[in-house]
Image (cartoon, rainbow, N blue to C red; front, side, top):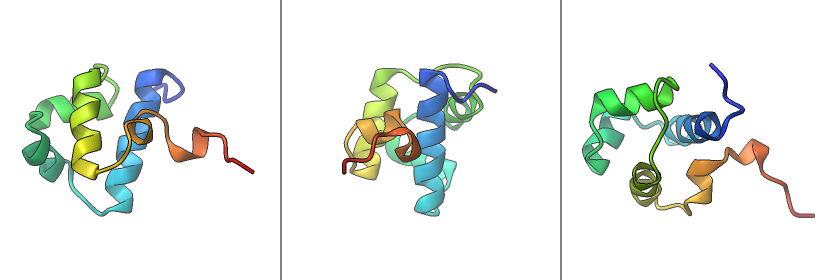
Length: 79
């Protein structure tokens, strides 16, 4: 799995938010309407996220879209 690609970074960001919030992929699926099998494929990098899916995920978490596009550890920290 290559988590350095754009899709990989998004998968890593979503996994991180899920873990931080102690939320399941099942809950995310129910809330966003993205099927569980699709979410699992995306998170395993079998298929890339669509921008619409990432938008739904950002809405679910109530965070800016950038938070589900790039893991916080990959973003520049403002001094």
